Length: 98
Image 1 (cartoon, helix red, strand yellow):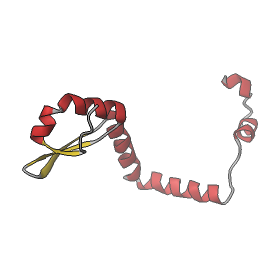
Image 2 (cartoon, rainbow, N blue to C red):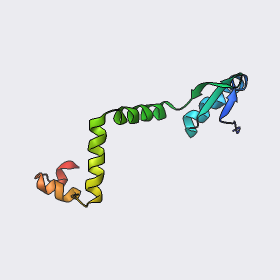
Image 3 (cartoon, helix red, strand yellow):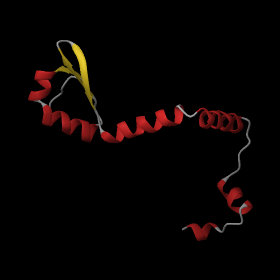
Image 4 (cartoon, rainbow, N blue to C red):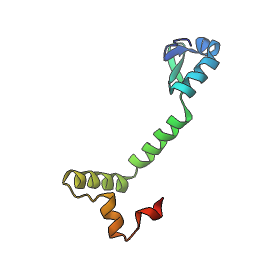
């Protein structure tokens, strides 16, 4: 396997396209393709793109971010229950979940 740089000109990207696809798929590597020294495209794994999109959706929802911040504060304050306690409180038998 070659050791391609993460930023490369379009001509080099064209010559190494299949290698880049393999590294993006199997190593979650990202490549920035340039043209005349300027970044024009980024090649990355679709799963990574989906994760970024999901994070952006969450971060753009002010109500959800506020809930996350509140939950983190509650965790730091020790306001948590164990899974066992939660199941007991909800009257759920752990064997029914298996």
